[in-house]
Image 1 (cartoon, rainbow, N blue to C red):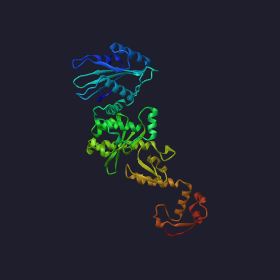
Image 2: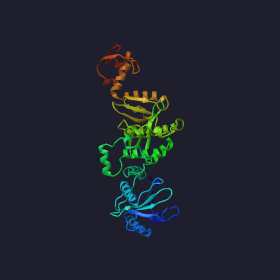
Image 3: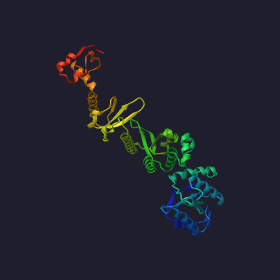
Image 4: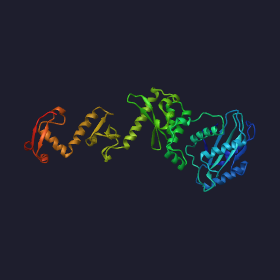
Length: 402
């Protein structure tokens, strides 16, 4: 069974009701209201009831909701079976029993189908049906109902067995909020899009239209290893969603042409790195690191890597213990190494220590084997403001290689 390519919403019930009930030469029989929860059956009666419900929320621009469900050509259901299917469908779509709706059956050569016309305004309290992501949800619901009502299965989302199950917390949140969790939304959306898109560019574009940011996982060799998917501020690896979303499986459904697709994928990767880099910092004073991208600095910690952006203007403030990864001109590495030493020397005690080394003829740049051990330092504090001639009196050293 198929629904309309896109569920329609409208301002007035008059046009859609008249269209659904208007006889046509292509119909095997005249359209017939087979179910719903409304009192009237004629076009005038239905329009009046629908309009009354819409008047409860004059602020709503489009109170009309319209979809159709069509069987494969040559198949048919009785009016009673259609009503059972449509009621189940509307409940799973999130409509209450107090949302007015009617089911109008059509029978033509293309296949038997029904039009479902509903008011988005609830008769009790005027609550509005929002229907977020309803086109994707509708596709999934139809697949579930085909199985439940023993109908011909049509092409739809991948079986649930290939998905990662929701955690207990995610299940409780879905039940509490009455809408899919980010993980469920991603799984349903990707499943649906894979049925309608067969190449990387259109797939990526469709994801963006549904509020999903694909993040390519590209190795340093340039090899494409798959996607992570971000939705509602939460990023999921393919392994967190299920085997269906691994790169090996996606390649079976999407035509991947490196020469055509790699520029787009690298662009997405770069955008993702920039977005993450500007929002994180390894220093409490973020003013030290402007947004302009010059060189990527990675703070070394036992478990995490935090990325910040450093410009030449604040190279002297680079943090201790860093690994430099050049992403611009090669000279940035040397500049930053010099800046790190300069920053270290800004610490008073290190400055004093450096002065002592210089007085003994050594620097930080000497090899390890050539460093000397300072056996005694009477006082480092006076050296900060003492001339070179005097400072010699404060240092006694012997030279023993490490």
